[in-house]
Length: 197
Image 1 (cartoon, one colour):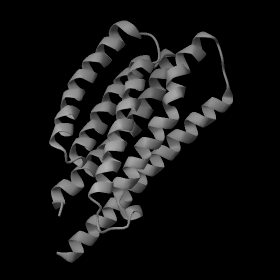
Image 2 (cartoon, one colour):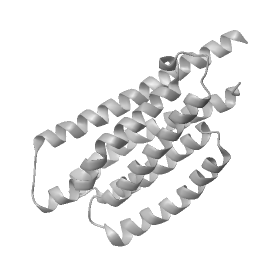
Image 3 (tube, rainbow, N blue to C red):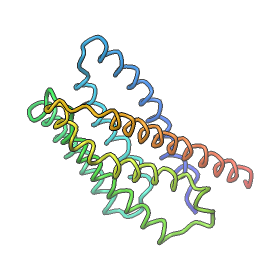
Image 4 (cartoon, rainbow, N blue to C red):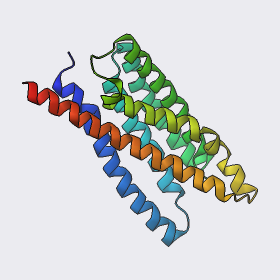
Protein backbone atom coordinates (compact mmCIF):
# COMPACT_ATOMS: atom_id res chain seq x y z
CA UNK A 1 0.00 0.00 0.00
CA UNK A 2 1.32 3.45 -0.95
CA UNK A 3 1.77 5.65 2.11
CA UNK A 4 -0.61 8.58 2.63
CA UNK A 5 2.28 11.06 2.44
CA UNK A 6 3.60 9.61 -0.84
CA UNK A 7 0.11 9.46 -2.30
CA UNK A 8 -0.51 13.17 -1.76
CA UNK A 9 2.93 14.66 -2.49
CA UNK A 10 2.65 14.70 -6.32
CA UNK A 11 -0.76 16.35 -6.08
CA UNK A 12 0.48 18.95 -3.61
CA UNK A 13 3.14 19.80 -6.21
CA UNK A 14 0.46 19.86 -8.91
CA UNK A 15 -1.64 22.29 -6.83
CA UNK A 16 1.39 24.55 -6.38
CA UNK A 17 2.03 24.28 -10.13
CA UNK A 18 -1.53 25.40 -10.98
CA UNK A 19 -1.17 28.38 -8.62
CA UNK A 20 2.12 29.21 -10.33
CA UNK A 21 0.44 28.97 -13.78
CA UNK A 22 -2.22 31.47 -12.70
CA UNK A 23 0.44 33.97 -11.53
CA UNK A 24 2.55 33.28 -14.61
CA UNK A 25 -0.38 34.08 -16.91
CA UNK A 26 -0.96 37.38 -15.10
CA UNK A 27 2.73 38.32 -15.36
CA UNK A 28 2.82 37.14 -18.98
CA UNK A 29 -0.10 39.39 -19.95
CA UNK A 30 1.42 42.37 -18.11
CA UNK A 31 4.89 41.95 -19.65
CA UNK A 32 3.40 41.47 -23.11
CA UNK A 33 1.23 44.58 -22.75
CA UNK A 34 3.99 46.82 -21.37
CA UNK A 35 7.08 45.57 -23.23
CA UNK A 36 5.40 44.03 -26.30
CA UNK A 37 7.65 40.99 -25.85
CA UNK A 38 7.23 38.18 -23.33
CA UNK A 39 10.04 35.89 -24.56
CA UNK A 40 11.96 35.92 -21.27
CA UNK A 41 8.81 35.02 -19.36
CA UNK A 42 8.30 32.10 -21.74
CA UNK A 43 11.89 30.92 -21.23
CA UNK A 44 11.44 31.00 -17.43
CA UNK A 45 8.05 29.29 -17.76
CA UNK A 46 9.59 26.46 -19.80
CA UNK A 47 12.23 25.77 -17.12
CA UNK A 48 9.63 25.92 -14.34
CA UNK A 49 7.31 23.53 -16.18
CA UNK A 50 10.10 21.01 -16.60
CA UNK A 51 11.12 21.20 -12.94
CA UNK A 52 7.54 20.93 -11.62
CA UNK A 53 6.50 18.00 -13.82
CA UNK A 54 9.80 16.18 -13.38
CA UNK A 55 9.45 16.22 -9.61
CA UNK A 56 5.83 15.09 -9.88
CA UNK A 57 6.95 12.13 -12.02
CA UNK A 58 9.85 11.52 -9.64
CA UNK A 59 7.28 11.03 -6.87
CA UNK A 60 4.94 8.88 -8.98
CA UNK A 61 7.41 6.49 -10.61
CA UNK A 62 8.82 3.57 -8.59
CA UNK A 63 11.89 2.43 -10.54
CA UNK A 64 14.99 3.79 -8.79
CA UNK A 65 16.98 4.09 -12.05
CA UNK A 66 14.21 6.09 -13.69
CA UNK A 67 14.00 8.30 -10.59
CA UNK A 68 17.77 8.95 -10.70
CA UNK A 69 17.54 9.66 -14.44
CA UNK A 70 14.81 12.23 -13.78
CA UNK A 71 16.99 14.03 -11.21
CA UNK A 72 19.96 14.08 -13.59
CA UNK A 73 17.71 15.29 -16.41
CA UNK A 74 16.51 18.23 -14.30
CA UNK A 75 20.10 19.44 -13.99
CA UNK A 76 21.08 18.81 -17.63
CA UNK A 77 17.87 20.16 -19.13
CA UNK A 78 17.99 23.29 -16.96
CA UNK A 79 21.56 23.94 -18.14
CA UNK A 80 20.44 23.52 -21.77
CA UNK A 81 17.44 25.82 -21.19
CA UNK A 82 19.75 28.54 -19.83
CA UNK A 83 22.09 28.14 -22.85
CA UNK A 84 19.09 28.23 -25.18
CA UNK A 85 17.69 31.38 -23.55
CA UNK A 86 21.09 33.10 -23.54
CA UNK A 87 22.57 32.12 -26.90
CA UNK A 88 20.40 29.99 -29.20
CA UNK A 89 16.97 31.64 -28.97
CA UNK A 90 17.41 34.75 -26.78
CA UNK A 91 14.80 36.79 -28.64
CA UNK A 92 12.63 33.97 -29.99
CA UNK A 93 9.93 31.69 -28.69
CA UNK A 94 11.78 28.90 -26.77
CA UNK A 95 10.78 26.15 -29.19
CA UNK A 96 14.02 24.16 -28.64
CA UNK A 97 13.33 23.95 -24.91
CA UNK A 98 9.64 23.27 -25.39
CA UNK A 99 10.35 20.40 -27.76
CA UNK A 100 12.70 18.81 -25.21
CA UNK A 101 9.97 19.23 -22.58
CA UNK A 102 7.33 17.56 -24.72
CA UNK A 103 9.58 14.64 -25.73
CA UNK A 104 10.63 13.93 -22.13
CA UNK A 105 7.09 14.39 -20.77
CA UNK A 106 5.80 11.91 -23.35
CA UNK A 107 8.45 9.40 -22.24
CA UNK A 108 7.64 9.98 -18.55
CA UNK A 109 3.91 9.55 -19.14
CA UNK A 110 4.40 6.32 -21.13
CA UNK A 111 6.63 4.97 -18.35
CA UNK A 112 3.96 5.82 -15.79
CA UNK A 113 1.21 4.17 -17.85
CA UNK A 114 3.43 1.08 -18.11
CA UNK A 115 3.86 1.12 -14.31
CA UNK A 116 0.09 1.44 -13.86
CA UNK A 117 -0.40 -1.65 -16.04
CA UNK A 118 2.25 -3.65 -14.19
CA UNK A 119 1.04 -2.63 -10.71
CA UNK A 120 -2.70 -2.01 -11.00
CA UNK A 121 -4.59 -0.60 -8.03
CA UNK A 122 -7.88 -2.02 -6.80
CA UNK A 123 -9.53 1.28 -7.75
CA UNK A 124 -11.36 2.06 -10.99
CA UNK A 125 -8.82 3.77 -13.25
CA UNK A 126 -11.18 6.72 -13.85
CA UNK A 127 -11.19 7.33 -10.08
CA UNK A 128 -7.40 7.63 -9.93
CA UNK A 129 -5.92 11.12 -9.99
CA UNK A 130 -2.71 9.66 -11.43
CA UNK A 131 -4.59 8.50 -14.53
CA UNK A 132 -6.06 11.96 -15.18
CA UNK A 133 -2.75 13.71 -14.54
CA UNK A 134 -0.86 11.35 -16.85
CA UNK A 135 -3.55 11.61 -19.54
CA UNK A 136 -3.29 15.42 -19.39
CA UNK A 137 0.49 15.32 -19.85
CA UNK A 138 0.39 12.80 -22.71
CA UNK A 139 -2.46 14.68 -24.41
CA UNK A 140 -0.73 18.08 -24.22
CA UNK A 141 2.76 16.83 -25.10
CA UNK A 142 1.69 14.94 -28.20
CA UNK A 143 -0.82 17.47 -29.55
CA UNK A 144 1.34 20.59 -29.07
CA UNK A 145 4.64 19.12 -30.29
CA UNK A 146 4.30 20.15 -33.95
CA UNK A 147 2.85 23.54 -33.02
CA UNK A 148 5.87 24.32 -30.80
CA UNK A 149 8.24 23.07 -33.52
CA UNK A 150 6.79 25.40 -36.15
CA UNK A 151 5.91 28.53 -34.17
CA UNK A 152 9.15 30.43 -34.89
CA UNK A 153 8.77 29.57 -38.58
CA UNK A 154 5.24 31.05 -38.53
CA UNK A 155 6.58 34.27 -36.97
CA UNK A 156 9.48 34.53 -39.41
CA UNK A 157 7.22 33.97 -42.44
CA UNK A 158 4.50 36.28 -41.06
CA UNK A 159 1.98 33.45 -41.17
CA UNK A 160 -1.07 34.04 -39.04
CA UNK A 161 -3.75 31.37 -38.93
CA UNK A 162 -6.53 32.01 -36.42
CA UNK A 163 -7.32 28.30 -36.38
CA UNK A 164 -3.90 27.64 -34.78
CA UNK A 165 -4.70 30.14 -32.02
CA UNK A 166 -8.02 28.44 -31.34
CA UNK A 167 -6.32 25.04 -31.40
CA UNK A 168 -3.66 26.25 -28.93
CA UNK A 169 -6.27 27.68 -26.53
CA UNK A 170 -8.46 24.56 -26.81
CA UNK A 171 -5.51 22.27 -25.98
CA UNK A 172 -4.38 24.53 -23.12
CA UNK A 173 -7.87 24.72 -21.58
CA UNK A 174 -8.39 20.96 -21.94
CA UNK A 175 -4.96 20.33 -20.36
CA UNK A 176 -5.76 22.49 -17.33
CA UNK A 177 -9.23 20.93 -16.97
CA UNK A 178 -7.68 17.45 -16.93
CA UNK A 179 -5.18 18.58 -14.28
CA UNK A 180 -8.10 19.96 -12.24
CA UNK A 181 -9.93 16.63 -12.58
CA UNK A 182 -6.74 14.86 -11.41
CA UNK A 183 -6.62 16.94 -8.22
CA UNK A 184 -10.36 16.57 -7.51
CA UNK A 185 -10.24 12.81 -8.16
CA UNK A 186 -7.22 12.39 -5.88
CA UNK A 187 -8.95 14.40 -3.14
CA UNK A 188 -11.81 11.88 -3.22
CA UNK A 189 -9.33 8.98 -2.92
CA UNK A 190 -7.63 10.68 0.04
CA UNK A 191 -11.04 11.32 1.69
CA UNK A 192 -11.86 7.63 1.28
CA UNK A 193 -8.52 6.63 2.84
CA UNK A 194 -9.12 9.03 5.75
CA UNK A 195 -12.64 7.64 6.29
CA UNK A 196 -11.29 4.08 6.45
CA UNK A 197 -8.77 4.97 9.20
